[in-house]
Image: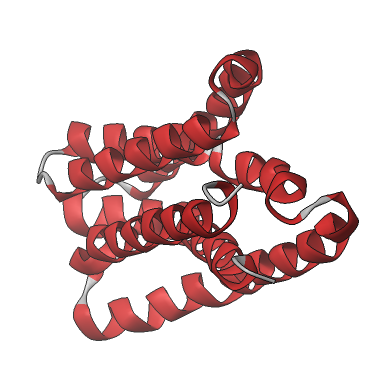
Length: 184
């Protein structure tokens, strides 16, 4: 099925991004910004608050903007948030986590909602199952992979890895749109 592998890659990358961001945010704040562990944990929770607030807001505006635009806006917001993580200032790192959370909010539901449009209602259930399987693999493997990588290279690679996930996600979504939505 044309475009199915790249959409599965997008789900893998999205969940790799979300899982790695959430799991390692407090460690990044402690090790790179010397924030006390208790404060870092509270600040890291802002990532999840960003997702929650973003999903709430997305529900109100997604009908007006459409899934494709919502996903694109979300990815741009994630990329902006990862750039903020490079700035060596505590406030910038925390703001970056919030922006990543806000940006993540419309991506997964938007991509999932597009499945019947991309592949037809008759194929949607099977494709969604594969997409969700790829998402779970991304969630399970990539945060652990990041942990091993950061043991070798240090926590300063956190924004680099998140930026890589986000950029690859943008590329995968662009290709999925090109192969599925733009052909119709």
